[in-house]
Length: 220
Image (cartoon, rainbow, N blue to C red; front, side, top):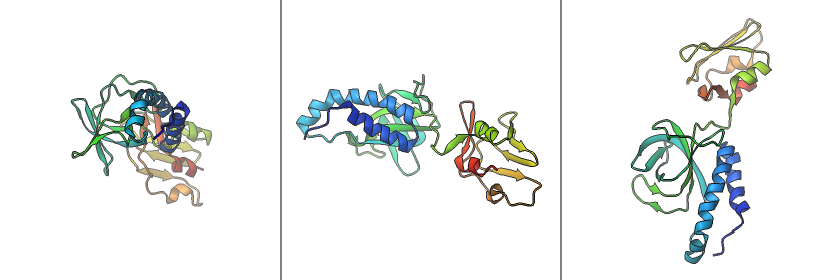
């Protein structure tokens, strides 16, 4: 089987995956590292008729991390990855992260055609990048988008409500919660009057409050 040697082939595949998963910067940076690994093994793959890389992303919680292995579980799929020499990157900036966290959500970019031990859970040596702080593609910065619609944002700290105000409208949110409270004096029905809960909890990405895109769309 003749494999494609052009680096743009791999870069194109990872770029397409990036657009789907929302990890554009980190995945494109990972593409270069993945291409170097693939090009080193290309001759052996041709000789042994090994399948070319099939790039996948597993996003889930860190269930365990020890002995050079990382166990990631998304609630449906759980895979152990060998992580020696695998770069750890920030999902938004693509910059290297000094230390892999011991808990929380990560996204592992891996080659699904790489050898995988049929243990429980399976062990893969196909990881090419670990992305921390992944933010879903449908999450948007709250302050910038709310202020663009004329709202003022007030937030005093982690235990305090996040308050948006404009005229007689007040919206209160809580960090790491899908609850919302919405007040206004108008007799008109607003889109947020029909929203009982957020589609995803409010989260903090670095210093930026992130909320679901449908909340921003519902703000009058």
